[in-house]
Image 1: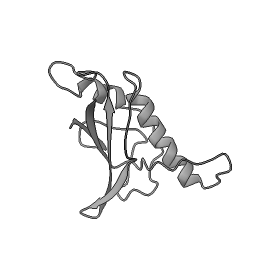
Image 2: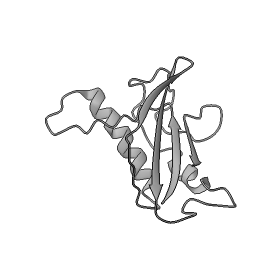
Image 3: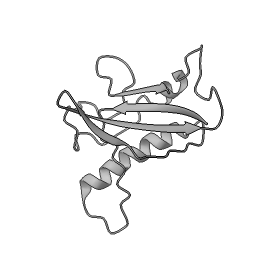
Image 4: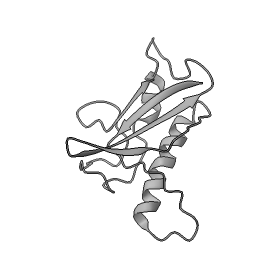
Length: 123
């Protein structure tokens, strides 16, 4: 398996709500996680051992998550092992401002630039 690490300011808490769930924050958190998984899944089936974990860093909430794919170089372009993944994830809609501490202006994953809110690397 080939592993990748994600860090994001977007609340991607995996809540696994059932059909009876009424808590809109829990539903939105799961929706953000699902959107990320679906974006990654456009090129490969993925697996993960642990759900995203929220950590505080300099009074900012950052979610950390790792996943794996079966094939090497799934997301490689021009020698960058995550270039295609960064292209695929950029602009995917999210539900912003849930339990995150950094206010997000745009309701999308942003993979580059001054407003970047998600970082992905091969681990």
